[in-house]
Each structure stands twice: as structure tokens, then as C-alpha cells.
Amino acid sequence: MAAAAFGGWSLLLPVVPLVVAQSGGSDALAGAVTGVFMAATVLTQLLVPRLLRTRGYRPVLTAGCLLLGPPSLVLLMSSDSIAALSVSAVRGVGFGLLTVAGGALVAELAPRRILGRATGAQGIAIAASQMAGLPLGLAIAARWSATPVFVLGAVVPALAVIAITRLPKLRAQPTGTSARVSVFTVIVPVVALACVSASFGGLSSLLPIAISDRAAIAGVVLATASGSMLVGRYSAGLISDRFGSGKMLAPALVSATVGLLLFALSVDDGANVVLIGAAVLFGFGFGAVQNESLVMAFSAAGPKRIGSASAIWNIAYDAGTGIGAIALGFVASVSGYTWVFIVSASVVALIPALAVAGTSIGRRGDPKPDNHTAGSKIRSYDNL
Image 1 (cartoon, rainbow, N blue to C red):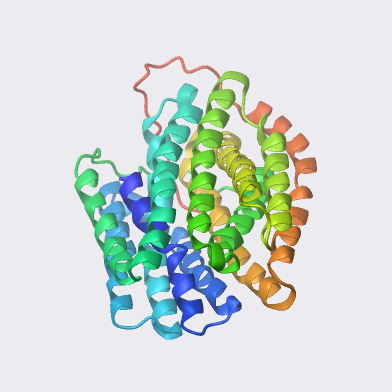
Image 2: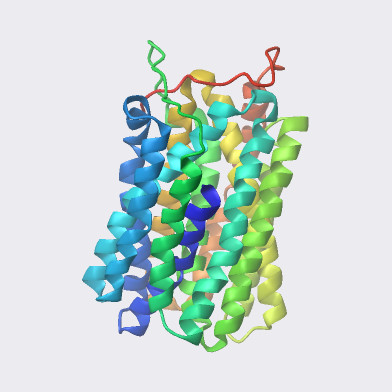
């Protein structure tokens, strides 16, 4: 389910801003396409914990796939700014349903002692589909047109409904007590994730435009970043399960920062090999930050607040991506693409100091060994 849903999402992620730019839109407008998508995603994510209690996982995930995919067919008729922004808003609602419900379902099903590896396994499905989808969408658009990309972006997420029919019929259960999670409880992973995802928002939306004269390498760079994310996510999950959450956060942030600095050096007529190296370092760091911050959020929130922790984590991820796409789009318009990555690296570089506090949070929040059977499930879930 995750592979199909995120595969369709990644096909369109760099293509829609590129089409807007090629149609005469500014870099700021191209970034706003991603920003509107993520704004709708975040607003939807606030409602998902309640929907999971009242409707259950399968209906919410099904609605998410159908809202994420088929609306892209509207872009076949018009890809002007109004159509692009409107479709992005509708698709963002679907993405908001998918991200919170999909992430929470993993924590619902996985025993706590393997939570890091379980979230890492889902991360592999997501990153692998992005590794294929990001360059494929750009390659199809360059070779033919954006039309087949819009069709595939509609069909692939809809196919995820087949996988959803095989998921357990679960409904999040009320705990009978307050299960609100303060953002301050998970401030370190939330801030770290938001800053790195903001950089990713700028990278995915603006890099294909910045190196449009090297269109082939743009797809390779995005695919490399996604593949490196895959390695980073699962590596962080293994380390988290063995040594406790929080240990990988600082090294991951350093890796992402160095990758962004290399992008800044190579985006204007730099060597392609440096772009690839930048993608490897940034992708590994971003993937590790994703998994580490998710496990830290679950550990700090506790088993009765899994749903709220999932929503907060996803809001940080998607709000960061959207804000980054918009803000860095303005930076590109005013100062050029080199400064997009200098600003991104500067922001991410400020966060490793928080990782020291994050390590202690992770240590205090790590679950005790699971004395129940391996199939024990976490069903405590509540509203934000």
C-alpha cells in the first residue's frame, strides 16, 4: 500500500512544479504548488486520529488513495496556476489521510521491541517507490510530455486500494483518558525533522528547474537521494532497536548538512559527480532523521498516545516540506539556486546541538523489554 501510494505521489512531485515553470510561472509559484499540497496535507492530518477511531484504518486509507491519485487527471485539461494549485490542494487531503494512518498502523501492529525496524521497513517501501518514481516522472515528461505522467499519477495510487483490502480490519480504540501530546514532549525530533524536510521540499521542487539544462542528471540525483534515504531509514531503525533511540540523530543531521553544502557548490555548472555525492549524503541523513525522529516521538509520547505522536510527526514532515518549497522558492527568485542550498544547510546545521538533548529524551523514553508475545499490538490511540 505504501509503495503504490508514495510511488504515485513521487511521480508528480517534481513534474507539476516543472510544468508550472515551463508554462511561464515563477520559481515562487512553482514552489507554491508543493506548498499548497503540504498545507492541505497538514490541515487534514489534524483530523485523522479522530477519523481512525470513528471510521477505522481501511476506509481512511482508501479515501486517501482515491483523493491522492485520480484528481491529477484534471491537469490533462489545464495546467495553469489555478488548476495546478487546486489539484494540489485536493491531492494534499488524500496525502494527509495516508501519512498519519499508514504510520500509525505500523505502530499499531508491531511489537515495541522491533518498532525501529518496522518503521524502517515501511520506510524502505516508501523510499524504493520514490527512487523509481522521481526520475521516471521527469524522464517521461522529458521524452514525451507530462500527459502520461498525470495518467500514471492517477492510476498508481488507486492500485493501492487492492493492497488495502488485505490489511487488518482495525479501528483505533479510545483510551478513556486524555491522550493529548504536547509538541514540547517531542520538540527535538519535531524540529530536526521539520528543518531537514524543508530542505527536501526545496530540493525536490527546485533542483529540476535549477539544472534543467541537465535534465537527465536531475532524475538520477533525485533517485540517488531516495535510494540513500532507504539505507538511512533502515540503518537508523536497526541502531535504534539495538542501542536505543536518539543515537543517530546528530550524525544524520551532519550528513544532511554536508550534502546540502555540496549541492550549493555544484548546482551552478558543477560536476555531476559532486551532485551525486551530495544526493548520497543528504539522502542518508534525511532517511536516518526520518526514522530516528519517528521512533523518538513514539517513545516520548508513550503507548497511549501513538496516534497523536504519528500526527505530530507527519505534520512536522509535511509542513516542513511545504514551507521549505515556498520559502526556498522565494530565495531562488531573489538570490539564485546556490543560496537555496546555503540557506538550507545553515538551518539544518543549527539543529545538531539539539540532538544531545534528543539522545537523553530517547534514552528516558525507550520502552522496557516487551514481556508479551511477539504479536502483541498497540491499540491505544487518541485525538490530538
